[in-house]
Length: 277
Image (cartoon, rainbow, N blue to C red; front, side):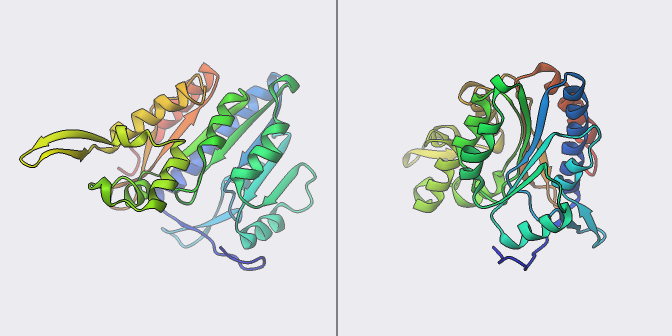
């Protein structure tokens, strides 16, 4: 984390640029539809960053998700942008300027979303929101995800950080995982049930042992969790986002209450799925 006035820009690769394009395309369709329905709709970003990133391929600045959202026409009514890093927040403020409908918060989105943002997007007030939760690592709490589903007003894009999970919690030898790794995984998942999903008992010469399953078992279980525990009605199969070696870094989930939203996102996912593979 940097202090106010100091900015550390994120260097992003090809698939991160794809993610920005996916969110931007959906945000355009989302804002167009809700404007026609005359529903007040807002954009929410829990890990907004400084507003711009550096493309690894060119070394040039590229707009981040907040700037993409701010440029959507027809526009969102309000914007709620959050980041824990003071330097990034100050730089984002400098780019946004004095727009009165943009609310920028410095702090932990796990608290700010629950206390200050989601209460402003109530179903009974005919308000709706598009929310991007793109955590830097395994530092998002399940309560935020579940609340987004339970209030019935949020369309959600979620970074499911499988690489960080594998590094910190989903080890081949689960008995060796640190207490911190377990705590972080429990916080993201909501409880310790991930252990029963990520491993299965297998008989060996030394008796029953826990065998680690692949990413697919974990991602399917989380998709089911978004539907059954968080209360979203529509959650398509997430899109794998890769690094330059082809390894999956995270999965991009989408969750909504509306079937038309799922259809739009599935079309966008399909458009980008095999690019750069």
